[in-house]
Amino acid sequence: MKIIDFKKNEKFLKQYVSLRNKYANLLLTKKVTLKETKNWIKKAAVEIRGLVQNQELLGVVILYLDKNKEITIFVKKPGRGLGERLLLPIERVARAKKCHTVWARVLTNNIPAQKFFEKYGYKKRKVTGKNFQGKIYRSLIYTKKL
Ligand SMILES: CC(C)(COP(=O)(O)OP(=O)(O)OC[C@H]1O[C@@H](n2cnc3c(N)ncnc32)[C@H](O)[C@@H]1OP(=O)(O)O)[C@@H](O)C(=O)NCCC(=O)NCCS
Image (cartoon, rainbow, N blue to C red; front, side):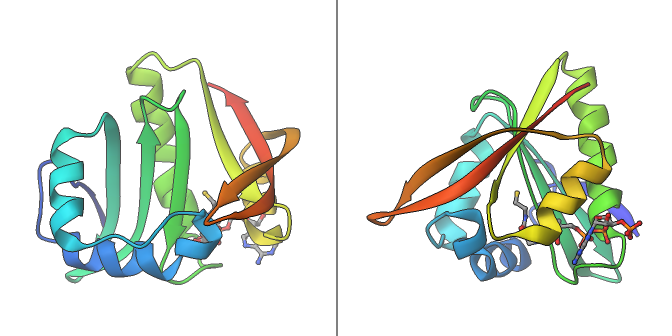
């Protein structure tokens, strides 16, 4: 398994789009196209890494430098330790970029993701609602001091 940087490697973008779109509802993001994703990755103030094995994209982690250091993470096959293999490297990237605190939003009914962030030292800070496509979704905000 290896970690790739999507800003330097476009090869896995198609797989990225399909994985991201699969989780659109959990991540409260609209579905994206390959074309817009290519442009977004070039311009966006993000650090974005993928976990790859045998030409297969197994997971993705994004650090949004412009959204107060939000972390978004999703893997193809949950519960096999892939999340850890992405979270720890992006925290190293965040430290190198002098980010002092990172945060993540998790839906209140997304228990696996809550347990995941808690295992790696993220603290529940508050419950907020997020408007997504005209509906309010309750989510927990987790933060971690690096
Ligand atoms: C959240 C997510 C990235 C975690 O990645 P993962 O590869 O499944 O997690 P790991 O296998 O590395 O698990 C690490 C720890 O998380 C916790 N965890 C993961 N899945 C869990 C589950 N289903 N139930 C309870 N705890 C769970 C456990 O503490 C686990 O440690 P353990 O194996 O020692 O018990 C993954 O579940 C996912 O892609 N979910 C969909 C997208 C999402 O909800 N992202 C979060 C919003 S940003």
